[in-house]
Image (cartoon, rainbow, N blue to C red; front, side):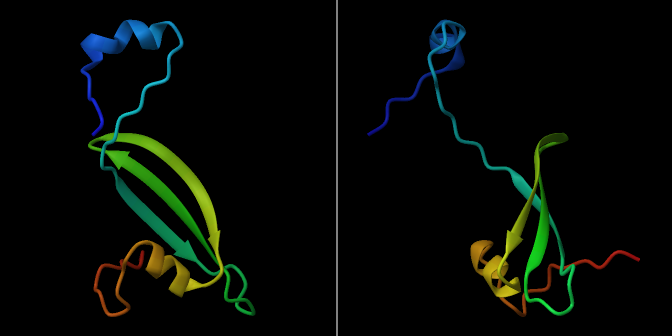
Length: 85
């Protein structure tokens, strides 16, 4: 079992260069597009947020939409997609 510490307990160690890890659940806002109609490849811009804070923004390329759906555990008939006007 992992031993967990508060920042108060290990802050000094971090200040001295020791690595420490924590886990938090973020929200992934994913924008998908297929840049080439002749290819199945899709590009996704993934924006990670935690509350009001942006904690990451990156672009990924997937072989096809089904790969993206599998990675994010999304059913084909799940109604969660928005199309900008």
